[in-house]
Image (cartoon, rainbow, N blue to C red; front, top):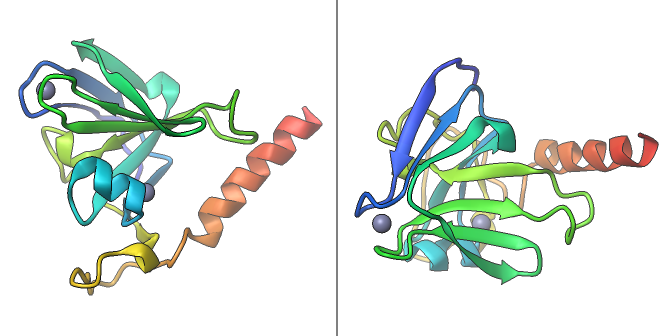
Length: 156
Ligand SMILES: [Zn+2]
Ligand SMILES: [Zn+2]
């Protein structure tokens, strides 16, 4: 989604506030076990941004490393799942993006999802029947973007 706007968001208790600006690089609803367990919900909507577009306004985001190099950010006070990042130093080819859980934005409609990912992992009673593409894992476009990034790094 292309926008020059700035959007603020935060956790349930208000201890953590953040701001993102500009276009998201990716926006999707994820049904994978890690995201959904972390949120305690059958699906989590994420929008990804270049790290430079993310600004912490208030409080601290606690990090839980759910698998090597996968950093999940949450509020230590109320437990709201806020961010997702990959550590490029640990995960070869990972992009230095910050994903925010879009339901934590003050305007959760600001970055609507483009696709459903890891839909094959969803819980059996939860089905979303809309017009967006549903991928059992991730979209080819998303995988391609990661590959292009790895190639750029190897060449540059
Ligand atoms: Zn909180
Ligand atoms: Zn996920």
